[in-house]
Structure formats: C-alpha cells, structure tokens
Image 1: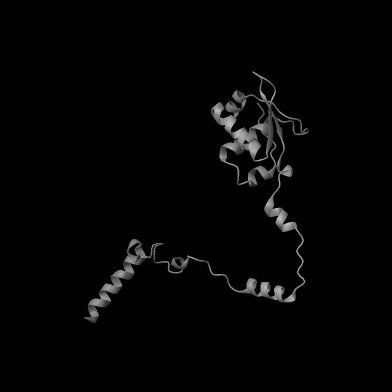
Image 2: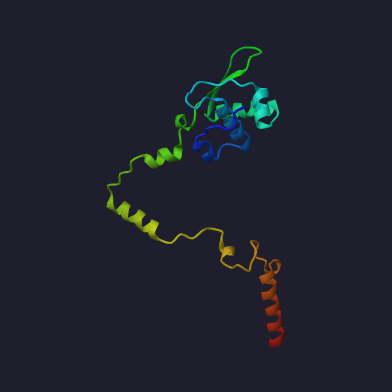
Length: 163
C-alpha cells in the first residue's frame, strides 16, 4: 500500500462531493501512477480496505463519482474488477466559472449607470434584523439570553419605580 496519494486541489475544493466520495476518489488516485493517466482497476475489496467502508458503499460511491463526471467506470467482464479512468476536474464543466469567463458587453450607458448605482448602494440582508440586536434571540425573545434577562430585569425595576 502506498503511503500517500497525489490528489489535485479540485478534489478538495469540490463541495458537491460527499465525504465518502472524496475518500473513494482519493483511494483511486492512490492506485494511479502519478506520472501516468492510465486507468486503475482495484477491486471493491481493495478499495473497501483502503477506505474503511463496506464494498456496497464503495460501489455506490464509484457510481456516484461516475455520474458527477470525476471517473469513468466500466466492467472488464464477469468476476473481474471494474476499470476506473480518473477524469479529474478538467473534464468537468463548471457553470459558475463558465459564466464568469463569458465576455459581457454593455453598449447602453443608461443600463450601465443603473447597474453601477445598484452595486454601490448598501446591501441590506433580508431576514437578519435579529442580528442587529445582540440581546435578542433569533425568535425575538429577550428572556432566552443572559443579556436579554438583564434588560428585562431593568425594565421591571424601572416599571415598578414609575408606578
């Protein structure tokens, strides 16, 4: 068993992968020669031993990784291990990256000014009014925080003094 695996940063950065999928993908990378892009063919039992998951979990994870485009999985025949071709992030399409790299042209100056004005205005988060009053809980109840209980006690004392 190799002591380490060379894994691209994209594996770590892909938040669409579950922990199990990430571990299985790293295990697949550990079987691959770092100087080669040839497919690997560890068995489910070998991947299971390396990852610490049941072989059925390994099968589900590799199927999911294939659906997400990280690997290409194919059977070599009955009673033989599957072949995994690690495709990596380069073969995937990233819609956010693609949208950011598309050129944007705006010839209408009124539209440009409108967008500039909207961007420079302060942004107010919706539904975060409770965050401005640190003594209130999210549900608006003062009595559930220590500072809130102190404010309520002061209000009661002030109310008794006004009577």
